[in-house]
Image (cartoon, rainbow, N blue to C red; front, side, top):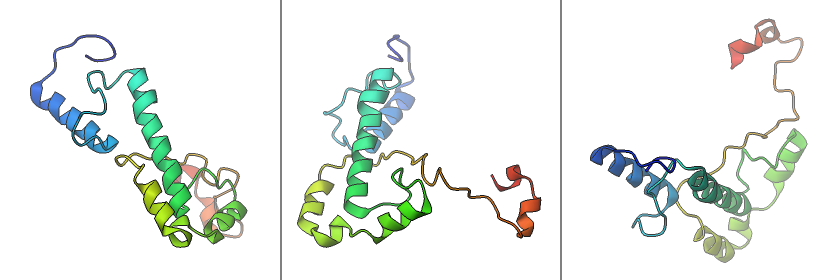
Length: 135
């Protein structure tokens, strides 16, 4: 089934896709999540994104991970870097929270340093190159 439409799929490709989904979602025995329709909106939002969001929250809480969507400016970034990490202050609680992480999914921090101008500054000679050169 693909997006609620029954389709014929290859046995190898379907098995590989489901095995990779199980690995990324931390469902190694394949019993916790229904993988019959992996491209549906409900699977993406209710399973994939919710797992990634939960993992991201736990990693940020335990390790103060960088990059993070919590740091829009360099000032906020320095505050996050200087804050004590839960893994150092309370290892038992950190270990307990690590047990809630499933798989390898995390959200990409699209808003990291979004309020900062990260281009070259005058008098740097790099400012003469067009912006597309650096992306």
